[in-house]
Image 1: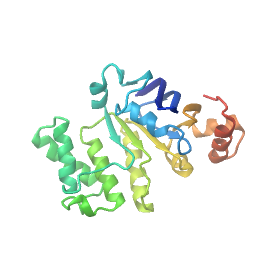
Image 2: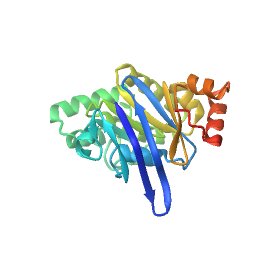
Image 3: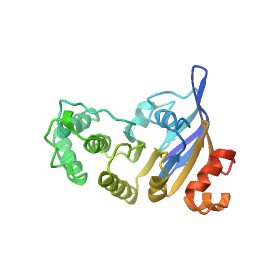
Image 4: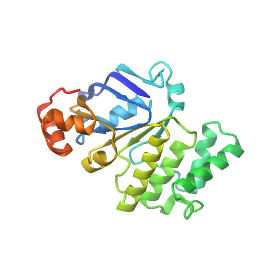
Length: 243
């Protein structure tokens, strides 16, 4: 479970995140939905401890990202935006390397890596150098890397960017499986169809703050709109506080 309260972050004179509080629960997919520049990526980076909040805090399964960032990080698997992978390693080597960083012994690391390669349908390119990978292959490798240590919480920053239709469908199936297995899945997106198809809960963020939170149906009902897209447009346009 992920619970954030009052997160705030500035970059110089720019307020990237002014006051973000959200809750993502186990066994559900929560979408962080907002236009470009709304503060989604900065919020996620604070949650997975790459940058520190100036105020506020978040608990990852009860562990503070401010007070215990390393312990909080162990409880998360993270797919950053445009995640880089080591181009001169194979997909298998990329994943096994991260397994070793997370403290897995060699035997468990090899077995877990093969499990993920099979689950993500990566066997065909598992032992090729990553230098020539397609975007879909890079995302799959980065996702396997994020899942190697069996994290309870999975955070993904706009994971479908640059993916073709088949790769998106494959990712959707995987996220659904993670939810069904009881994981807490939190991902950011500005693509309405993606959020509508995947999410149990939606957190709408605009101008660095949360303007609404609830299920897609609740957001439609509260705005009186027939579609999630129209509800989203109304929410970010009016700044209604419906959370």
